[in-house]
Length: 246
Image (cartoon, rainbow, N blue to C red; front, side, top):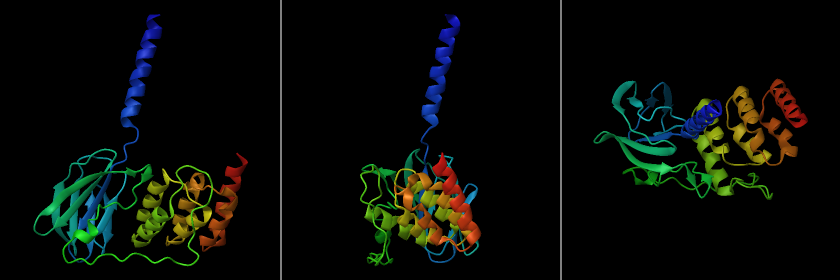
């Protein structure tokens, strides 16, 4: 009996630890209101861009060291305080330095908040408002299937715009994976996302990781249209066949 009680206590402690450590998505979005080639470091991860917006997903530390470089010169270095399972919005300016502006939830009405900067983009003095992207003929639409968590057309357009504006494939991969953690899409929509990547290796990684998020798996072969080389297409088809046979 004593052994059984000890086992139950140990099991409860393990469950508690697991509950405390699960779902620790922590994001940091940084906006830099200066022109030039900007590189932002968050601990060991770096993102470079001329566009002034930087997204870091799955930040491990709640107190990361942030360094901002402009034209190869350090203009800021500080430690920020982040909140677990939230998106922290920070802004850098030459006057105020790097400051946390707001902490936002990662989900809005059950859907992942893809690019929620809470209107900050148009709130920066001297920066023009971003025009809305016109509808394009042939743009993939949300499949009319009775599934939960299917990404809305508006959310998909927003995701596609974000991926297109991201400079490097590693950032595109992180963005797509984060969005598909809690959303479903169609094979045609996935094809559009995969095409935005620059290299077949990145396209293959996304295509494989997104398999379980696609609602119309009978059309998954369409994703091969996004690949440049036949070798990559064959690798994806082999992967699909293995998944389908399980």
